[in-house]
Image (cartoon, rainbow, N blue to C red; front, top):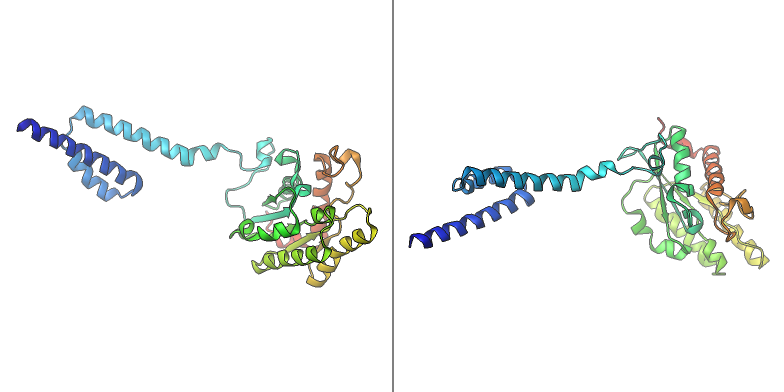
Length: 280
């Protein structure tokens, strides 16, 4: 009978330990844990108590390091990853989002070589503590970008959106009127969240002259009607220059994106968009 009682007590102690360790890990209720631990550890020898504390401390330290400690060792920006002295805080006062396709994304390039990262470096070098978010999907059309807008924007309070879309619409000869409508709706969604928009125009080869002309004219018409700044041609100074493009002749290389980033930054100054960004 005594042995049975010892067995039941031991099982009861094990279940209590399991219950209270779970309470400590998942409820983080110090008062409850201190109360229950007192009843558990009363039946334990000193050596078992110390062993359990060491094990539990190791688990707690491991969980803390996994969720919090390792994050501090990761570079916070492309600039930091390449050894540049430009750094970003975890909660910068300025967030800019670039919306586009593979032309804007940095196709086949390292992240820090794409135009969003190079524009971010320019901004930070000149005292604007801004993150530039590269929100792109390769092959995106204006319709597909419109469909993912709610997911892309979420609830982030962006100070500016740079919109460059339509290249794939043109290359696929999709209806100009549909592209026109999609871009307007994208801008409306941005403005509904009080996000200012910089519209960047695109052009396509004049293989079909009438279509290419109508395509090109969509951007200034939208910008004029909606009274938003327009950077006329995203690839200005880069298109058709073999030294500034990848071998495919379509996507810019790192040097090409450096030109684009400089052009966009200069235009932001001329259009007074920089005046609305925080500056150190």
